[in-house]
Amino acid sequence: MADLKSKENFLDRIGIPSHLLWGYLGVLIFMMGDGLELAWLSPYLVDQGLTVQQSAFLTTAYGVTIAIAAWFSGVLVEAIGPRRTMLTGAILYILGQSLFVGIAIPHLNYGLMIPTYALRGFGYPLFAYSFLVWITYRTPQHRLGKAVGWFWFVFTGGLSVLGSYFSSWSIKTIGYIPTLWTAIIWVAIGTFLAIVVNRDKIEIEEKVNVNHTTKFKELLNGITIVKKEPKVGIAGIVRIINQASQYAFPLFLPLYLADKGISTTVWLNIWGTIFISNIAFNLIFGYIGDTLGWRNTVTWFGAVGCGVFTLMLFYTPQIFAGNAILVGAVGILWGACLAGFVPLSALTPSLVGEGDKGAAMAILNLGAGLCVFVGPALVALFFNLVNTQGIIWILGCLYFIAAILTRTLKIPEKETGKIATVEEESIV
Image (cartoon, rainbow, N blue to C red; front, side):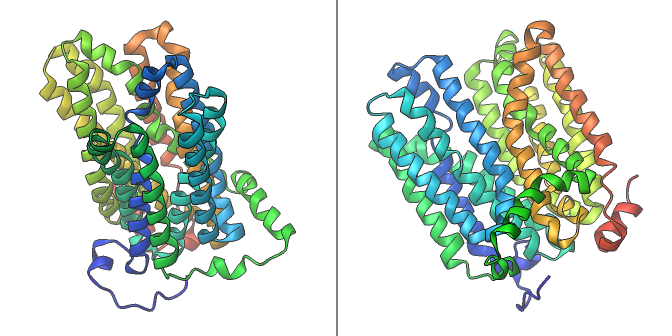
């Protein structure tokens, strides 16, 4: 890894690589624009005349392109460099959003809504996850846990917090459609900060003018890395399990809690508070990971912690019916443990050599995309058979399986250093 050639300052000490500050700010603002409609677009479209099923299929099509782009992000960084990959994501987002808002929605043209919204789905994975790969290349290994923790802080903060708060204000002030148009402005500002204002140099960019055969090999490496380094595939599975419940819970948990005396409105407030907790612990577990070891943090705080609190989200309302404070407390702890998987973004590229880090991150990013499908699919397949209790136990057991799988993710001896030493000396 090239010398950063800059003296350590406050940002470096708290875990933000100072040479990448503008990239972090760019991701925050980009994700704010990308996420401003997530909480209200579906009910808005239903109010305009779409059926619930049509709205759900629209979201599914969007999820397909997110998964594809998530995989391509790490591979394309290796093939064409992070700046070009991020710019590609921004262009696809702006194009898809312009067609979706400018033509499809005003005419309620469902046939056009699907491809344009799906096209938009390529945007944030290519942009944000490519920057995550950039971070793994340009951050010293002993601080990588903190650096990726800050990445998930700005990612989630933009997507789930700032986007929602901005929408709650702008919808009342300028309306739904103008709010959707503002997304392009935020995305453009974020892109400018992360690509133009961010002047950091990365060695990959010096190698992008290679022939097409080499580029094809880089793309192929995004698949063959799993055979070459099976642990990368295991990390991808753990990443899918990480957020599977996040996409499963909204489909059935509010209904269950309503039967236990906790209204949907109260649940929405709990859900929002959960992700404020999650954002904070994205940073905390970045620090803990660099101290206790990445593998230990993911195992005990992430996997085991999520497994325990997933089960408690079912049994707490059983024992204390209608007690929103206790359910909220359990939810906050679950959201905190969800952040316990943050060091996986530092651990996974450390499992492979320098030339395979992008491919390893491609598999991890693919897992981040696939969890959008796995969570809802589990509910669709098993809910009628096992009901709420059964689904909760399936999700809980998946987390315990993830804990076992994570114990196999040992850093190779050639990559050992402070982190590897901590891994061996800490909790077994």
